[in-house]
Image 1 (cartoon, one colour):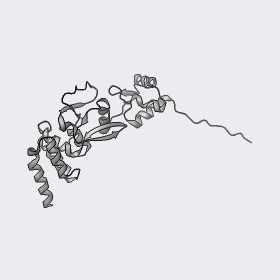
Image 2 (cartoon, rainbow, N blue to C red):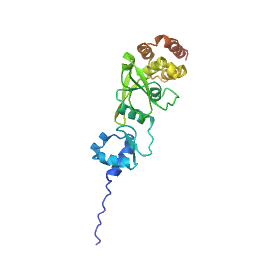
Image 3 (cartoon, rainbow, N blue to C red):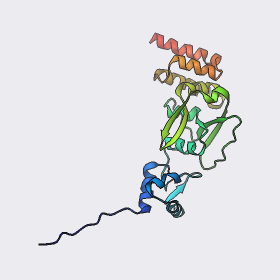
Image 4 (cartoon, rainbow, N blue to C red):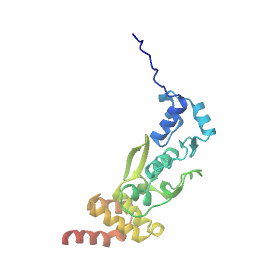
Length: 215
């Protein structure tokens, strides 16, 4: 009788496993290697060989890969953990604008040192007091804690910084936020007060409320 031949299953090596991990996660950080029993030396070799690309200090992606918008938020938050995604980028996250910013808009404290980050596209905006601390949501993206202002706070921020982004963008955000029921009218009034733009937003808030009453 013919003997059975034992066929060895192919076990991927460190190179294959690291590349697969990078493709799966989108963003790879050195600390992600140890749970997978991968070494930083393997990461260094693949980076030197051009199979892995460095996208900031401690941030790597598979060569040729393009970071999605959300992955870019994760990359920025990993580098600037005290920052909060705001304004146009927060609007994009909450699907409240047709704008497509090429930079990640990030709020930091007025007295904080600006991040020395040249490899990630950042637009830094200085916030202070309650306007910086209120209305923050935490989202997990690729294992990174990403802080983003909630929809109502973002709308109020847009009116506060309307000279930077345009009043038309702020109005579009308000209408979309209200029509899609992403926030209540009470929340919009509350964050208007936090951002000290109650008088600016009043006619627009009353107008969208009136439109709702006529519908």
